[in-house]
Every structure is written in structure tokens, then in C-alpha cells.
Image (cartoon, rainbow, N blue to C red; front, side):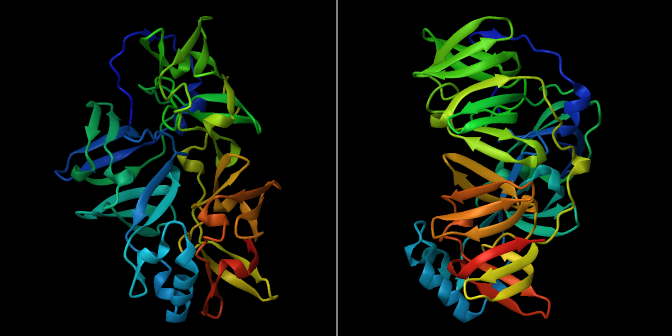
Length: 406
């Protein structure tokens, strides 16, 4: 939730920002209501998403792969699924799923959102492809949206009243009333990560508040006023730009209740650091700009080559985990306590190692051994590869030797 707290103590020393570098990274567009009213300006979702690189989440109305599977292949999935921790068998009825499946992409990958029925929204990607989403299961289609219209000021809009949202390139410069993304270096037990910061999975702009208590008194500090945060005992030491030092505790912003720190690196890489691995954050001047709306890649269908353990090889369009079909969707996995969210267009090769891990090769040459997620473990539902002669082949995860993406 966006934080508009009643402040007991406010310390505001907002630094100057580089408008030309940061303003284009903020979500911007036009909202049309059911009554015909329109508003244009900077937008922020109730879940705090405010940057084009933030992740949009909603449930798909239909799972794209189901009509491509044979009854035999569906039975194989049922048999393999009996041991899945999340009870995958409960999702099937007469060999068809009875629940929805998540769609995730960056906000910058979306051209528009249009309400087509009471609980249905059509998402149009930048390549013109449309995905039908449902509002029945929550997600970002169930959240209020804040828009900062130049004529009407800040408005809070319920999605029930929204007919469409058309995303547009952000004006440069844009004078943001809520500040610009925060940048820094995060020291962890697994190394140093540098980029734009999302603190406690919420705070990411200069005006967002980091909260805690000092000697029982509630204190809220603007993120942009902070020079350093260092974990200590049951709280954190904060060094402010003013030179003042504070020890804060008794709030999930500054203690073990923290939900994690996300770092956006170059190329839309995302890594989440859990509190137990966090040592310190040093806020610094940005060293690169976040991706603006105009620079997001046009989404493409996943395609490549798949090799099996028995030596067979197939080439064609790929439906990964029976769910992901575009290269702007994400591969998820954990490495050494760090949680990675990687767009498929950055993935060069995936090599399953066993039912717990897969070796992931990235296009920049890096390799990650990832686990703890359906995408990279034996809980993966398998892959459909649509070969050029029109035949659809379903390949179970434990028979895959490698997948090379084009």
C-alpha cells in the first residue's frame, strides 16, 4: 500500500535529483473512466508500482497450453503432480484446470488495459498481442490507481470505474510530486549488488517513508533523506544526509519483519535480498538510467531448441511450464538465499540438473544455479514445443537435457 501516514516526527531534507535521468522511468499514461472522463499524468498503483520496470501481476482467464495437450499427456501431468507440494491435482477437473494462472511482465511491456466485462480485462502488449485477464483472483487489477493529472491534481481511481488505461512515454523532464527512484549499493552475505532500490517490497521513491521507533517515539523519514541503512540487532542504524544518526526499531521497515530488498540492475535484472542476508544499504547518485517506456523490447514468442535425455532434439515455438509464452515473462528461482526474477529474453540456455535445481545461462555470459521455484525444479509442469511442421510436442521436465532460446 502507498504510505500516507500520520507523522509524529518528519525529517525532510530532499536532495536535488537528475530530472533528465530519472523522470522517464516513471509510469505515465491516460485513464478513461466508464463515464467518459479522462485523466492524463504520472501513475502509481496501490501496490506501490510506479516505475516502468516494476512488475505487473494478474491472473490469466485461460491457460494457453491446455488445448494443445492430448488426453494421454494430461494424464501424465496428473500422475506426476500427485507429489507436488501445492496439490496440483486439485487444479484439474475432467482433465482441464479449474483455476487461473498468473501473468507477469514489466509495466513497460504493456500498451493498454481495457475492461471488456465485469471481471475481465484485455491486456494489449507492445506487439499488439492480447491476453485476457480475470479480476476474480486479485492482483493488480484489484488495486486503486493514483494518477497525478496536471489539471485535477492527485486522484484515486477504483478499477471498477475504469474503462481503459493507455500507457504513453513519460515526458522528459517530468516534475514528479512524489519524487524519483532511489539508487544505491546493497552489501549482503552473498556479495554487493548495485542499482535502483525497492525497500521492504514497497518504498522506492524519494518521498516514500522509512518508519521505525526511537525510544518509543514513531519516526518517519523520507527515503531520499537517507545516506545509509545498516542492520543491527533488532533494528537498524540510519545515517541521514543531514549528518544525523538514528537507531530505529519496532517496525518491519527496519527489523527482521522486513519483506525484502529488491535491486534493479542494468538490463532489467532483478534480485531480491532477504533480511537475514542483508548487511547494509548505501544510497548514492544513480550510475545509469532505468529503462524508459520507449526502450522496452517488442515482446516476442518464446522459441528455440530443446534436447532430451535420450538424444532427441526439437526446434520451434516454446510454451514453458505450460504457461509462459512470451520472452517478456519471467523465469524465477533462488540462488544462495537470493531470489532472481529474470525476463526470458535475457535467458540463453536452461539445463535441468535434478528435481531441485537448474543451471541457467544468461545472454551476458553469467550462469546461475537456481532452485526453489516451479520454473527450475521438478515441479515444472513441462514444455510444449510447436515444431515447424505444425506438430505440438509435450516434453516432461525430467526428460529435458537442455533448452536453448533464440
